[in-house]
Image (cartoon, rainbow, N blue to C red; front, side, top):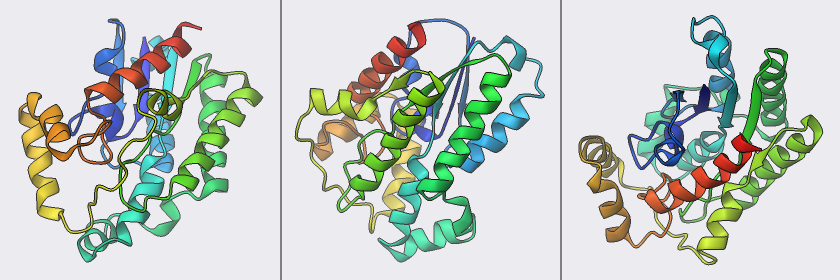
Amino acid sequence: MILYLGDSLTRGIVGWSYIKFMPPGPYKNGGLDGDTAHGALRRLKIYRKTPWYPHIDVCVVGIGTNDLLQPYLMGRALVWRLVFGWRRSWKEWADAAEYERVIREILDILMADGKKPVLMGLPLMQLRDYPLSELSERNGILKRLSGEYGVPFADVTAAELEAVPRPRRDYDWGHVGLARVGDILSMGLVHAAKDAFSRRRGLELTVDGVHFNSRSARLAAEAVRRCVDS
């Protein structure tokens, strides 16, 4: 059985979950909208106490997007400062050093429990002025840790850039708080709306600058599948 530990990119209510395009088999979708690296670590510790956890063979760890995305959004508009200000302290958004520490702890737990970890890289964001250098730094951390721990690394960004060498990167969440609510409701109710949003906005890889469309979800799934099978 596979545990997919992640955030909304894993859960797949807004946008497509890459899990939908993985080979069939038993799994647990451990995706939680808005979750951060610290949150994933806390949930893993809770999962260890569940009756299904002993049956997990592989854990795909795809977490860290919100550690960059949410602070970025806080600087874009007041609405996001209000949304995130009451939910989290700054300490819960891991900087690069803290992110590495948390991922190390996740790997240590999984390996001590006899699970096979797969590190899933952070995907591209198609947002205006998004800190892509920091995203690249986090992916560098994941790749380095994969070598150090001897675990597979699914390089999602590389797969995306191979498919779309020059993706659009100028979508803006700055003043679209109410539109985001509409996105969530529409995509949660009608799967077909997901790619329709992507096409209407001219986004090659995402439905809204962040979440996978079916194209990038398939690319991510193929990168993850190769790692799971290795």
